[in-house]
Amino acid sequence: IAREAKALVPSSCYWVGESDGVPEIMYPAIISRAVRCLDPFVQLRGKWIVRRLSPHCCRVELHAMPADRDELKLLHAMGWETANIHLGTPNAARDILRHLKKQSAGWLHTSAKEMSKAVEADWRAWKKSV
Image 1 (tube, rainbow, N blue to C red):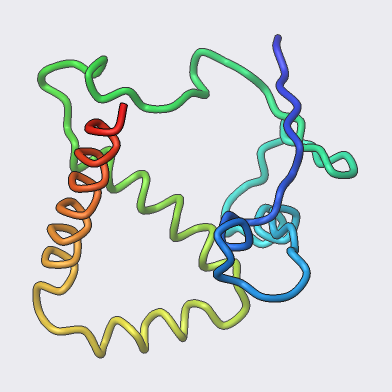
Image 2: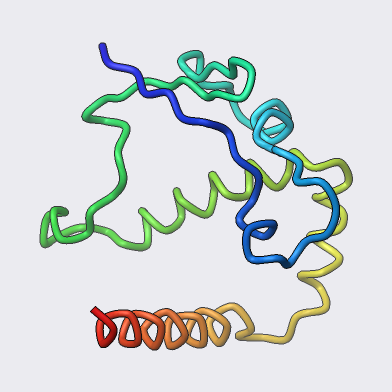
């Protein structure tokens, strides 16, 4: 059994200067409000987070996945977990549904394509600089 300990830090919004005020570390609130079972191996100790390291608890490397993979299933699971975190915010479900009702047909697909272009442009700029 292996564990990692990392310092808890505020959101990167504070780092880039997009938020005013005293940086708040939201991790304790986020994990306590998530709409799912808590991970019994995650512990917050002061300004540190301690969690397990496991071959089954790692980042998803797309190139290492089998050729017959189901990307939609993977994206669904990732979206589900993101929703679990956001639904833990008080009144989030109501606000999210209100927001979704205002969106036009195809908004998510269009937004995903725009984000993909922005990420690729950032990658090209980074690649050119190194």
